Length: 292
Image (cartoon, rainbow, N blue to C red; front, side, top):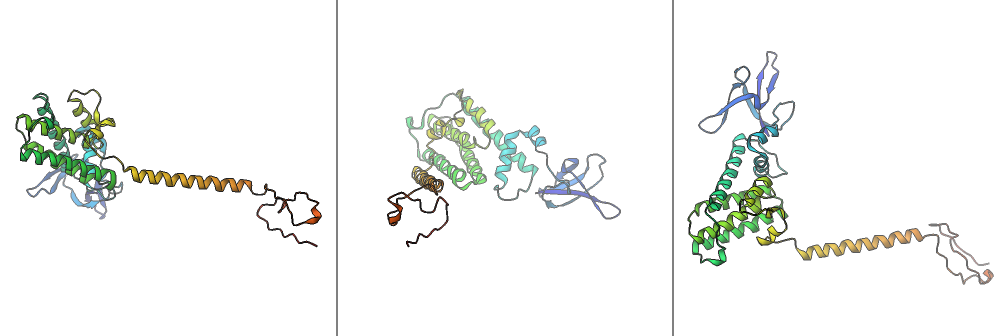
């Protein structure tokens, strides 16, 4: 969804203009107010939000945003603004908000790593607030894992990571215990955002001095205790598929063997003890043999 900008011609027909060709500003309530076209400065009218189409000339070129904010910002915004099955109402200010979030996370990681290595949380004594913060880190891991792997709700997963980043930003003390919990929390945020913003998270992970990004290897999720797929359910599914495959193979062998099987006919004394083929090799045909 994107707003439309147009002018009415003398014959009453609306002439639409692309949003990139219109100068806009926001009022005190945050509403978009068009100032005019960039080409002639003449005023234009703003219409209701419509689906992006050529007829309304309200399409947004993603390459323009990628050149301005980066590909990770565009990916983060499109996956956070709305679920994949719903319509997305485009907002330039929301794109800038996603860019500010990534910049804030980048700055937090660089400030933390510039203070030197941090101890492991198990090697220090944590007070009640730090234990609660660490518990929130692992609760975020469980929620994001469930949102992405089972529910396919990327917007709620990103929102959970944003809340964790805000909580980590408040824990800005430089004592070993706080830095240990903050180290674990920042690593968690980087790993959880890796499928969504891969370029930024890989660069941040290398900031800790690791040449190969853990977010691109299987060791990352195991290290952060992210639960994998349920083995029992996968085992049952594999057994079911194997049973279906065996049944299909037996059915195909029976079909190929029709018309070629022979049996010894013992009901005909006149056959002289010779073998006779019931059905005469004609598959699928019913033949009655009557003794005379």
